[in-house]
Image 1 (spheres, helix red, strand yellow):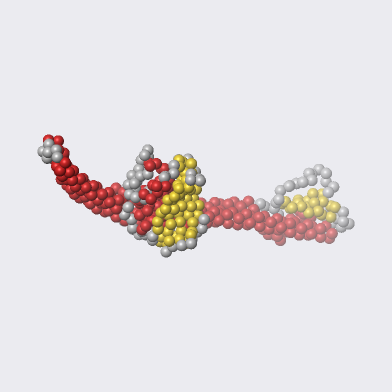
Image 2 (cartoon, rainbow, N blue to C red):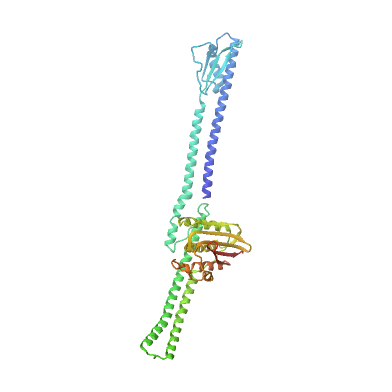
Length: 436
């Protein structure tokens, strides 16, 4: 977006420069022409007064006799028309012209009395100049606008049209090729990001395929392992029902032990299933980089502000300091996403806040939400896989979100703590990470 803004600023500056130059040039030409007219009129008036002193003629006759001579003398600066208005003539109007192309000078007799006025009317050369400059300016503006539009089309719109179908293609076609790498200032970073998305999708598809294969194998193994203990338990139950083992206490004890052993096998298989599922869900590989803490705050605001406004939940993100940290930006954002999802789900909707700050040995992410407080006795268990608290009876969920958050935090060298704040009616989750 910034290059486009710079382009618009450059085009606007060129237009402003053109119009400014046009205004200065026009103003300068008008002043120069007016000054030349005044000089010529004064020189003609001086020449007329000299003739009147040397010759016994009337001013009007002198003007008529010498007008052609003056035209030759002053060339292109000579007036189109020279007219003398006598001060004693009451039949003609006082003002023969009131435009800027006419200059007037007083003509005096030898004794200093006013004889009349000499009016010199000059051609309007400014209009022709302005017309030519205006046409030139319009042509230049048209070329600039056309060039800008063509530049935007060929450098931005046309490439974007070719690239616009690529996201749908990589989503639908697993074997889609990558985009050719480019250093284009407009789309180079976009192409790099799309290729990174392509690699991520390919890796996710492979991972999902491997997980599905493992799950099918695991389910088949568990189904086979559970089948035998269940069959034995059913046989023992039938034997008890038919009295096959008798009714003595020793027989009952033996049957109970056998049923317990088979039930333990089923319990062991169930535990393995839960552990395997938890491990596959929480698999995470950190990608370390260097960034400022306020970048994480800005990302959180960008992604959650509109969502919270839509749900009418007061929401705030504060970053009290801005240290340069080395960690996984999007890994930390995944932790915040899980904590905010948990706060939104189990809070009462009266407020959620996120605070990011620097501490002596690292930095912390604190998420608070108002709502029902968990009992103190349940806090040690809330980060366990598939564990749900007493406040989750009427709320959908799997009990895996906080577990995933803790696993990611552990992978990044941190941990998450939870505590009750009875004085404010809030639950607080603090993720602390040591500085690398």
